[in-house]
Amino acid sequence: MLDHGAPPHNGGPSAPHSRGTVMRLMRRKPVERLVAEGGHGEGGTLRRSLGLWQLTMISIGATLGTGIFVVLGEAVPKAGPAVTLSFVIAGLTALFSALSYAELAGTIPVSGSSYSYAYATMGELIAWVCGWCLMLEYGVSVAAVAVGWGEYLNELLDGTIGVTLPAALSAPPGDGGVFNAPALIVVMLAMAFLLGGARESARANTVMVLVKIGALVLFCAIGVQGFRSGNYENFMPLGMAGVSAAGATLFFSYIGFDAASTAGEEAKNAQRDLPRAILLSLAIITALYVLVAAVAVGAKPWRQFTDSEATLAQIMREVTGQSFWGTLLAFCAVIAIASVVLTVLYGQTRILFAMSRDGLVPKVFARVSPRTGTPRANTVIVSLFCGVLAAAVPLGQLADATSIGTLFAFALVNVAVVVLRRSRPDMPRTFRVPLSPLLPAVGFGFCLWMMGSLSTVTWVVFGVWMAVGLVFYFLYGYRRSRLAAPAPSEAK
Image (cartoon, rainbow, N blue to C red):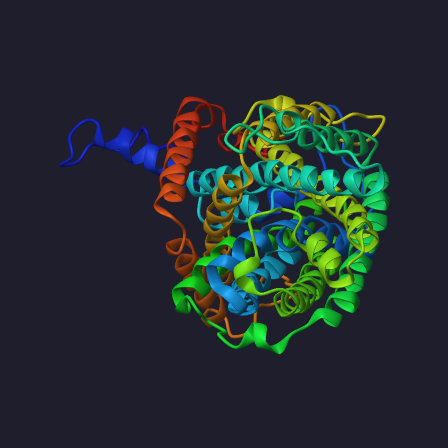
């Protein structure tokens, strides 16, 4: 509580006010209150309709796609054949954080993901910072993924009807275009699915996930026919620094496994299924990434990789000498990347839903349609913002900005699991991170290391983003936070 009544000390008359402000910034939201509010929004409630299978597919759907279909072409020139090692390093970084996510998702099964975990363990200001990073992670990554979707759409159109969209309408400014129309279109399509309801969106996502897993298996089966061991002779041409730099970029490929945690208020048995979905999806994703990267580099000399977003389709065409297989892969990639847009957009809307319920962002984001059980206004606003961003900003800048926001949020989750273990050791946990606090500390260190591998420009963008977020918090969230008011059960 704000301690306005405490007597002043050596700090002068303003000391009580300063101390009250600090206490307000450090105020924690009790886990019991977080869980009790689960599903409740303005005018309606979210519907619990998702089981383990759907949650796992959401996690895979949000993760498996852009990193291997799109960003691989940007990462190989940084690391050479050792890009496979870069995937492993990025996967290990994700694994340590995934263990912490799994414990907290089973303990605090709510939509806010790491934002809510930080609110329960480290206080309101840190929670806001985490939530603001999640907006960078989810919202900006939707735009980044949508940019890559347009590249594969052009590959598909070229292979089927022999035409492509003009550069002016298929690339953002700075990449030779004026407006990336396909990127906007795919975001609008995802919005339409989400407005129909969580269960319907999950069904569509499951179909798309199965298609993209099949596409990657097909790529490996055909690409291995062009495998040349000589492509691996100079395995690490740019040294460990290149491997680290590529790993930091490729970490963008793993920033979806936590999407399952944003479905905590729509899961049938969240405490049991969320930890399982997070870890199972990460295992499947990492295995596929490493396998596909190994085949891709074996089939094509690393120096011939370009920054084209349709890398895998090009390799298929080169190995077979036929356009059919590349066209087929392009079709699968169009489906695959669309599922990433769908599930990541879903995660962003649910995080904003939780933040709005706490009063830190406008209440419009917490309004729930009684008919569909979805935050409709939230979905429309976020979709329009992400669609316009995708149409106007190049992919590379978006991917790196997303990675740094994600790494920062993951670092906080590793801290949160240790804090909650110490502050609430007797809470029931359906999953426990082994060797805690050692593994969370390792996860925290990995996140900092990979953040340090990102460019100065990315850090500047991140700094500006955080400054804007803090200004918004102190002008809006700090004054309107609902944590100062008693919970409904406490007011009786």
